Image (cartoon, rainbow, N blue to C red; front, side, top):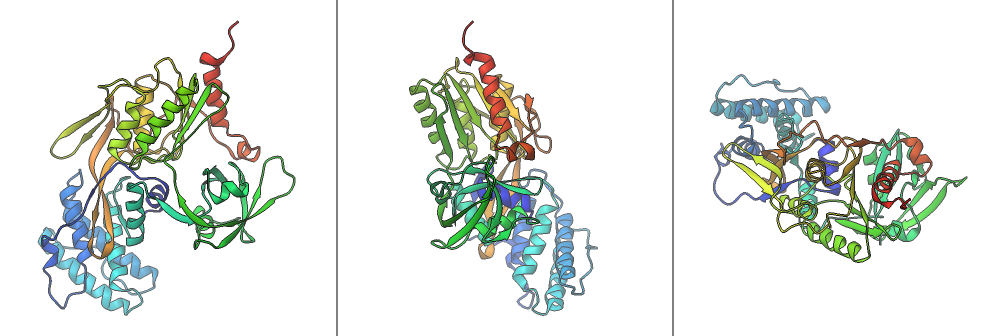
Length: 448
């Protein structure tokens, strides 16, 4: 499974519906008793063939799956079967792939088991479609996605969101109420060591894995903080971390700030309550932080947009092989039209996050500040597979409310501001500061 896809779902989820396989027998279920178990691969094939919005050729999909087998064996230095299929029909390709799979299992001689080979083939098959919302999920990844979809996303750690810049790792967000926050970690602290081991040369996944661990166990985190001459050491006890959907606060008595981390179940309701609370405190301007927001449920995405925009405006169009649907705002905006809005975006703003950003821009409700978004805007569903795995499949092509294609291109902000390593080392969130400047220029400057 592509690492970028995994990272998106660790923290937030994409526009999605959820579907589970029922008890109806599928074509892949009938196979010779002596054949190796390739049920996961054939189940994934049927789903991609029937559900993917492009209507992919099953022969090409099986050819990609065969290539995945070859690569898995090659990585283990095992003699590999032929990398391509010769069959030209679906039925012939199924039979040929089963033979290749049997050969792969025999060649592996226990160094790779049937499950590992199935996962390698299914991953290659999904990845061959080369879109942002199609990927194979292991049972562990599928369990985590299910928690995220129900807004029960949790893991055992300290409660930070990592940002990587120039080979360095920063705590971009320290989630409120978490062990990290209680221990004194701050946003933009640079993580220089975990349990005494330097993070130099690590990947973001390495750092994250080292920080996470069993509940109740300690982890030593060393950070360099802007303005401090020496690193600061913290020993933090890991706890189950529930990634919040929304964080909000009043910045200076007149400027509100809401960060929407993801769009899982209930997030739109939380967003609306945050808006009402800030307006009740006399908010005169709003910073909406969509950085790192990789989306969530269609209904929650539309719900957030509906709190910002007048009713009846399309915020996206979804199109598959049979129909085209418009998702429109409803209920009227909660944010008073006189309150100016600046929304922050970055390369982690994807899917539903991009829908909201594009709607703010297209309907001239506010100004976008930051960097171009991820360009990962399709609608997908998850389908459970035999053995506890699942497959995410893009089922609909999605455009913005004005019909703009964002997949692979992203949404360009009105004011482009990079968050550089130099900024981070100084402890400055340049994107956030520019957002405040934009608001000051519009309404917050004192009258002459």
